[in-house]
Length: 295
Image 1 (cartoon, rainbow, N blue to C red):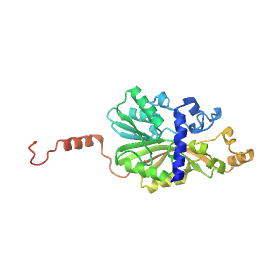
Image 2 (cartoon, helix red, strand yellow):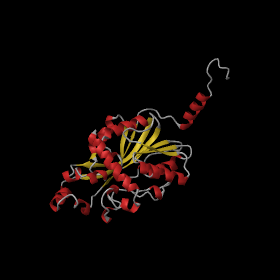
Image 3 (cartoon, rainbow, N blue to C red):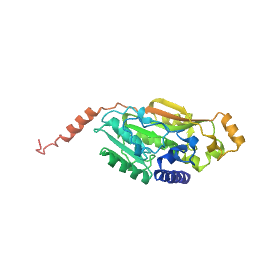
Image 4 (cartoon, rainbow, N blue to C red):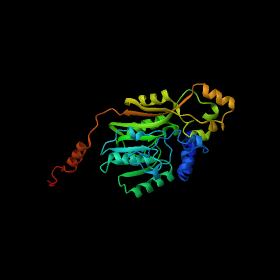
């Protein structure tokens, strides 16, 4: 537990600094966490700029995928974004869910929460809210979300099993998630695994692809699908901070793969459509207690 808390503090400190610096500095780093390098620009993030609902002020260049593109969000849905940052994925999700839906962003960095709230106010959105909290203990009730999205965040959390259990808890029966994350095939060199910057930079905290998918299966999710997969290459000028020339050559030859994957899965159960839910709610609110004379 002490180690988990130290890692969380490390990530919180790093992402507080990211929230306070320019987007160009964030995008020019390995998931916003290492010394800026022209060669690292955009090695993980996908381009949101042509996506409906996109807001440049909310895009800090920290993602490794585009989960909202695959999330099958419908009008009226309640969507939760894990690690919502300055609100980028929330605002894209809000475009899909419309005025009749609701979007909840969760982030444990207070500066990020404040930044996201400011952006939501500028946009005039009254159905997007941001809650401060850990995604492995979400400040959300059971069976709330139709859809959960997340972009390059689970790899930053020490206890990934707990996060996936929380996703299962907060999804409605029949609900689903679409999450982009970093995974590995093969073993990273020790110097990369143990470095704090590489952990906060989304790489050292990543787990094996097979283990990642197994955690989802163990939680009893259904229809698990990899919607997108792309390889991530760490440029030499970053590797030189941690490895010798000989170690870099070995790293490039040993078959270690770093990938951004977007995974979809469904919580078992029958999903209730929004119109049916509204009818039930109205019916419940109009029901009179016996012998009250209200009818």
